[in-house]
Image 1 (cartoon, rainbow, N blue to C red):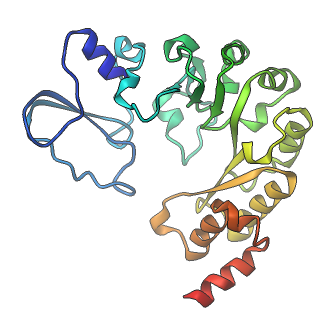
Image 2: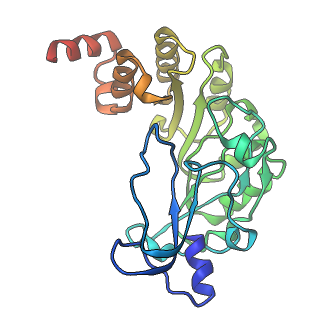
Length: 281
C-alpha cells in the first residue's frame, strides 16, 4: 500500500499484477521461505522485477520516502475502515525462532506517529513486535487511546514489561484484541499474566489471546501445561507450530484442539479429544 501511494504520487499507474499485458515495474513480495510457501509465480512480463519481504531475506527494506508514505488503502476495498501500521520497530529479545531482531534491530524504537497510517478509520491493526520495549511507548499508547478507534495489538505485547503505569494507559484504549506470547516453556510467566489480570480493564477472555510456540525445543507436556495454565487463568491460548512439516502428530492435534475454540471449550481434556480423533481415523 505504501509502494502504491508512492508511485501514484509520482504520476505512475498502479494495479495488481496479471500474467497478461506488460509492466514497467513489478514488485513481488514474499513473507515465508520455502518451508511454508513455494516461490512458484514467475514474472516474465515486466521490464524490472523487484523482490522483497522476509521470504527473500532480511536485508531489504523500503526506502524512507516510501516507508513514510500514507498507505493506499484503496487497494483493499474489502477492508474499508481498517488502518494497518507500525509505530515502533525492533525487539531486544533476539529469540532464536524469530526474525525481528535480525531484520529490525535489537532495540525497539519509534518509527512513526499514528497519523502516518491512520486517518479516522474505526479499527487499527497494530503490527509492532515489541511496543512496550520502546522508550516512547507511553506516548504512542496515548495516541492510540485518543484515536477512539478499536485497536488490535496483533503481534503481541511483552507480558514481562507490563506495569501499573502502562496498563493504566492501555486501559484507556478501545481494545478489540490484545495478544501476548508464552514461547519459552522453561520460563514461568504465570505471575506476569496474573498481574495483568489484576490491572487490566479487558475483562473478556476472548479478547486476551496468548500465542504458545510449540515444536521448538518443548515437550508435549510443556506445551499442554502452558495451554491449560493460560486457559485456567482466563486467557485464550493460540498454538503456533514452529516448522510445521516436522512437527509430531500430537503437536498438530494440539494445535487443532486449541485453535478451534468451539471444541476447546467443549472438550476440556486434550486426551479425550486425541482419543476421539484416533477412533475417527
